[in-house]
Image (tube, rainbow, N blue to C red; front, side, top):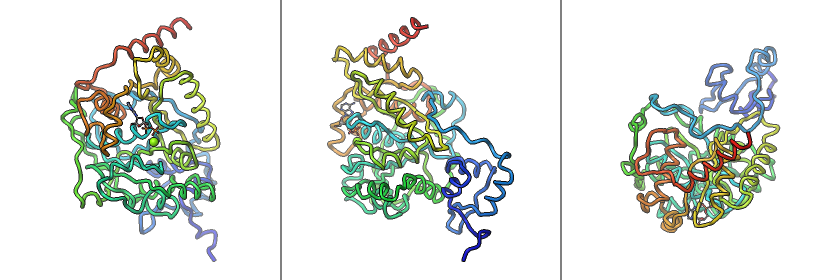
Amino acid sequence: MVSMEEKIYKPREFARLIGHSVFTLQRWDRLGILKAKRSPTNRRYYTHQQYLDFLGKREAYPHSEDPHLEESAYTAQTSHYHTFQRRKQMRIITIYNKKGGTGKTSCATNLAANLAALGFKVALLDGDEQANASMLTLPHRYQRPTLTHVVSENVPLLDAMYQARRNLWIVPADMHLTRAVEYIHGQQDFDVLCDRVDDLQADLEESASEELPWWNKPEVRPRDFKIEPTTQEEFHTHPDYLDFLIFDNPPNPNALTTAMLYASQEVLIPVELEEYAYQGLAQMFEDIQRKFRRRQQKLKITGIVPFKVNHTGALTVDYLSSVWRAFPTLTTFSIHTDKTIPNAQAYQKTSFEEDRSSRGAKELFALALRIAGYQGKIVGFDDCKHCAHARELAQQAEVVEV
Ligand SMILES: Nc1ncnc2c1ncn2[C@@H]1O[C@H](COP(=O)(O)OP(=O)(O)O)[C@@H](O)[C@H]1O
Ligand SMILES: [Mg+2]
């Protein structure tokens, strides 16, 4: 029998025990505040002695952070002209909206591929059993394992990653993804993806402190970048490190949605403009708040992206200005309605691959640059005058209210 002294805890168990989140533990490990032990396979664990030590001087540790949604302007992440080096920690972003058809998959696939074109290493997890995001892995045949096996059979994430484009790995979905959803429900294991991501981080190296060549330039030209195909061999090559992990949500929220949100640090919300669009958003934020009420974890809203914006509708400007007014620091520029986006999907391509001079491709590329934190000029990308008008209306409304 194992005595208490020899007992060891996985990060998640230890986090529960001491009332902090796995993310806090990771941060403390990095900062040397509370170092995890490492198994021979580089998995993090904690000992019972560490638990006793923690209890002994609980006060010496940083106070727990209140669980809440942290609002942060998507442009305010980095300042212009500092030397950009790859972050050592990967960013984990869920593309989220409770409604189906708002542009989540279009946003997720194009964002992931465009970030890869910029030189970041990106993995995209497909949470939809219809496997729309997984289409980027074609013409390679469907592969096993998929996200289904990652969740319900404890397969490491790395084993289910296929490099569909240079620097872009897809963890595909399959038609049995409901098994994963049932597994999470049955076990009430909403932290399952936290654990898999934690193991993934142990499997990956820290990213090299490499500078991206375009970062310090005052302007970038999207047409200087390319989304490159991979060879059969590269397709089966795993990443050595990752800059971004992106979750594409199920079309309608289920247990997997919750698991994805719990494993994320950020949410990006594509929203369709319609009546009550901003009330819908406010409601969604409340739902997320509720989910996170008992968790010692912050989730940052990275941006609200007006999607499929079409100025032929008389009320579009009104709807857009209501969103701008309610969320002035979070709302990004619009991704307008453009047939390139669905056309590209029909050919298992991204919009940039289909037609990089199209409006949709340009806007989606600009979105990737801004999400990455680039603040210089993006050549060929102009603010839409109708959208600018909506923003002005929102600002005027604010002035009147004061
Ligand atoms: N900006 C856009 N212009 C035109 N069609 C779009 C645009 N964005 C998305 N679509 C189309 O709308 C449909 C739903 O988008 P999708 O990204 O699959 O939404 P979700 O993943 O939220 O269900 C798809 O057919 C997609 O091609
Ligand atoms: Mg989708």
